[in-house]
Image (cartoon, rainbow, N blue to C red; front, side, top):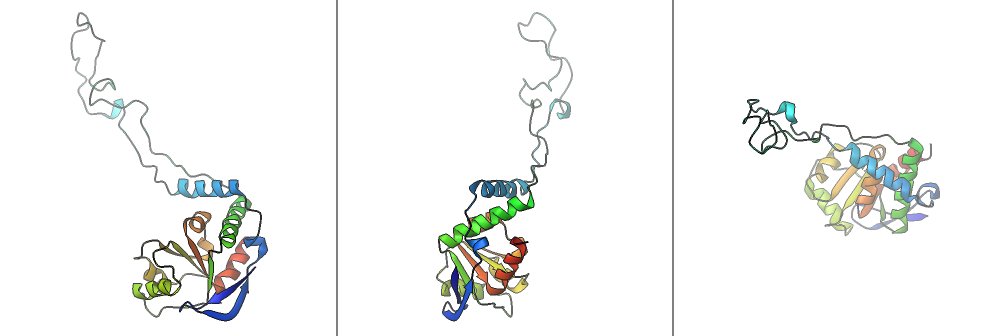
Length: 209
């Protein structure tokens, strides 16, 4: 699959890039995508939820009323879950939601997500570029030139670039990652995928090994 390379002014250049069919033209595996996205969301959960149980509630253990003759249940403590303000039965406790997946499955999921983007013609290949200073105005101008302002975009760089990253972080719906950080969830969450020329080789190196 060949894609025309566009410059940051939004104009097509004379260059074309071939996207590897082993990454952008496979038979998508929806279950692999589901598992990888599930892991991404699970691993991002803090899991710090907590409620107080009977032993942790600070209430009196003085016997509330006499043992017999009230017509009610015997109660020796106001910490009981049956009393308002008492402890909670089987409440949530801090836990780790993360789980592991095989590397091959995660690679298959990323390839499947990239294939879906390629089929939808939602991939734009940009010439390699740099910003001299971190300015939101520059990144906004880039999106305007590509007619992507107001849309969710994911820009994939070959490596880290603090100027480009800082220029994008104040804009809603934009995300900048390196090829090594590319995840299935981020690819599917974006309406349009922006790949710089140098990042394509990095993605192929990571997913074809």
